Length: 357
Ligand SMILES: *Cc1c(COP(=O)(O)O)cnc(C)c1O
Image (cartoon, rainbow, N blue to C red; front, side, top):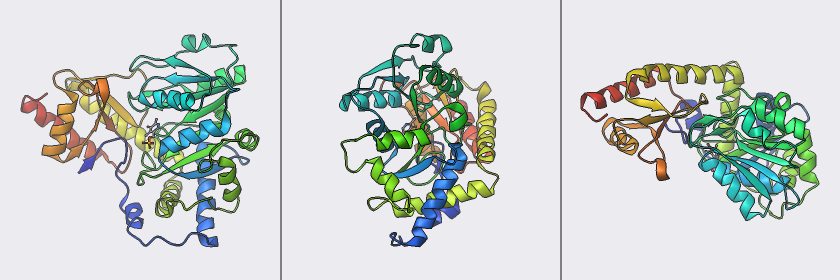
């Protein structure tokens, strides 16, 4: 199968081969060194600065979203949450469950967050801002500079879910005022699912130590303490952490985070050029390099997904709920090439010849 979903995605052969090895015992100086190296590479790739920290959570991206919220905020806070799709709704649900006061900025499908919209929330006493910087469900990338500026001005603590944006779109935590950023193993890191990563600014680390999350497994104080010696409080997904380490090192060797972003940008641009003559509409005002969200104007999006899967050996990414028949997404993350874009394009052309689209 050729995989154009948004995760799990295709991994490089060398990284995938590590997944077939025996899983080593991990309370050793050798494994600690691997973890410390991964922490440093994550700090470098996110621009968090020397005093920043990285924690690795065994649990998918959502575990780290919840961990970030409960370790940084409580009922005395007032959160502003951007809700432009199913991942924004997930942050809302987390705040709801943990009884943290919040207001949401609801955005219509495909719409970007504008300076005018944000200005309505100026000077309203918010203490935290939660945003999925790339709302993967609808393929909308929000403006990090705009949000960072707003948070700086209003003295709001900014948490960015960059789960599908890390390694795809430029990010510099220090320059853009991002205190916490989250990513996951199965998106552009192109490893198996099961691990998520939280990068914390110095300010975020202090805030965590001043706060009781009321949860044992996701207590980031414990994770930070253990991380000082390259360890985790509990048995982590050791195999995936080894794959993440190899992947981060490979990115570094290939020129670093900016080269990886450029590679992704070129793949996305190539795909977007190729589909111009097809009966497809791009539904996002502002896209990430990670994903192209498409409304097929002549056929059901879900039917196209099914036919490509069953008859062409290609996975694109379907949408759920109300958007099931309206939108599918094509991911550009993972070990994909321009030739893979051509293969997908040939399949779309064939669907057109057959009168399916
Ligand atoms: C994939 C993704 C997540 C995490 O989902 P999991 O299934 O828990 O890994 C969260 N936010 C965004 C924006 C995502 O793209």
